[in-house]
Amino acid sequence: MSIDGYLDDTTEERLLLSNEADFDRVDEVRAGCDAILVGAATIRQDNPRLLVRSAGRRAARLARGLPENPVKVTVTSRGDLDPAASFFGTGESEKLVYCATPALAEAGERLGAVATVVDGGDPVDVHRVSADLAARGVRRLMVEGGGMMHTQFLTRDLADELQLVVAPFFVGDSRAPRFVHDGVFPAGPKNRARLVEVRPIGDVVLLRYGLSDRCGA
View 1 (tube, helix red, strand yellow):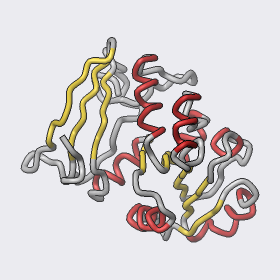
View 2 (spheres, rainbow, N blue to C red):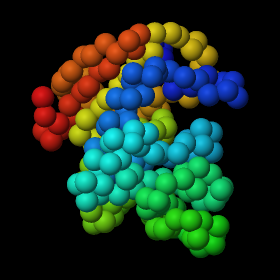
View 3 (cartoon, one colour):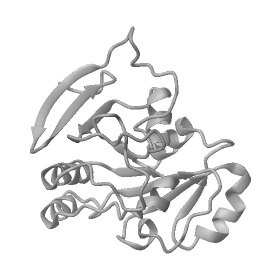
View 4 (cartoon, one colour):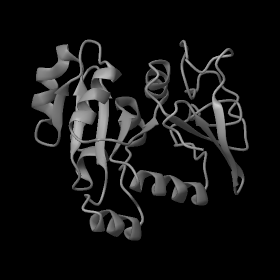
């Protein structure tokens, strides 16, 4: 995020908050996960591929008996995603779409050929999503955004660790998307998150916070 807590600005061009060294760090984290989750808005706005970029890391996954890339996961209330989006069209890994119950049939018709569409509840319940992912063998889930997904996983106390990278500039526009939305967070003033690591990475800084006992020092 920017110094003032934004994930993007209000222009059509994607705002690059990080640098190549940190992109490589994120790639390493991705390679160590079973699945990567983004919200539907992130797919529409950023068209992410959500693949492991490093050939060496993909080969290491294969050597461990894993697919080259983690499972891709998204959450949607309306199911109105483009089946030609990079999320669906790139990589051989499984794609899971957790959709709100009222839009399930329509989402199945639209996306059933490119993904597995799962009933996520009405509205979509991230506890239900997490439990279903666990039943499918996902033990380590990386939630990459956006702000709505961050807010839901953090307020529902489902995150074990927060990796926050701060870019060295301000966005300065309250219309821009923020890192989180309003909510009641377990890590509040009376229950401070545990700072596990501070690491400068070029001109950005990584802050790692432990949010549960499952996050090691």
